[in-house]
Length: 309
Image (cartoon, rainbow, N blue to C red; front, side, top):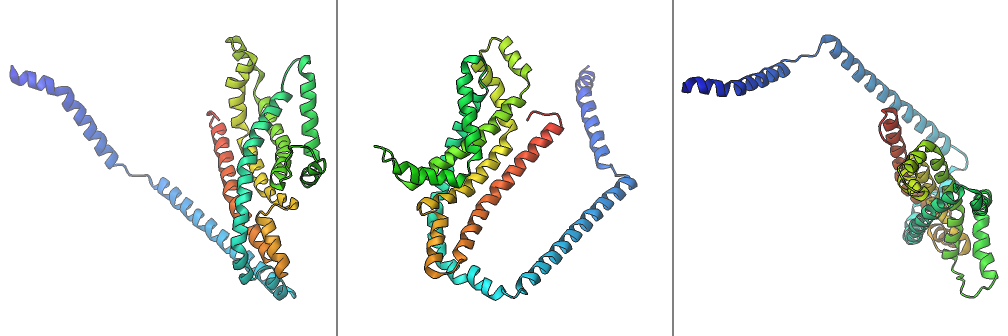
């Protein structure tokens, strides 16, 4: 009786263990077919061939450019004027100190632009005739500052506002230059947000309203989350452009990386500091650009797979 009970009690467990063992044996005994092995070898060979072709073509292109540039008649003079290692080393500390101003402008102006751009976009999407004046003002603002060149906007803010001699209004070129950046980029970002809001299907808003949400609640909890996710790549592109344009505040006399390079270049009559400042901006911009590309590719893959953005 005891043996029978033991056999009955251990039967299912033994059967499960036997099934697991059979599965393990089956997995261990799996061998890919000859056709699959051939496909994998072909893919590896094609990858190696593509990598080799890309490497060779890159080296050939670099060699041709090097020969054309170095072999040009004015290369010696150009190298002394734009690529002098001595002036690069001496100007680098001052340029890095000025770069700190550019980074602060990027952080502060970027935050202001995102918030203000979203508010302007919401004003442009207000419904009803009672909100027509707000929509008209928001539209006029966007049209004006998108059409006005940024450098003119900076000149007007930096030199025009102090000329008014208004009581309590700052004359700091950094603040006034940042104001010009915010005014211009808010117009661009507002259009990006508005495009994202308009891409959300009206049925989303109607469904939210049918559930008892007000217009503001439907916009906040239903429309905006979908709209913002859809416009992340263009928003990042605008921030990349803002990072580069922070150098224009030097027009008003603010000592940023560009102006620091200009001071050294004016003293030494050598333009190498400009090249150093430009390369620093490129080094900062490339990671932001690659991050933007990664976000866009990730969103495209999710949309192609039918998943949530």
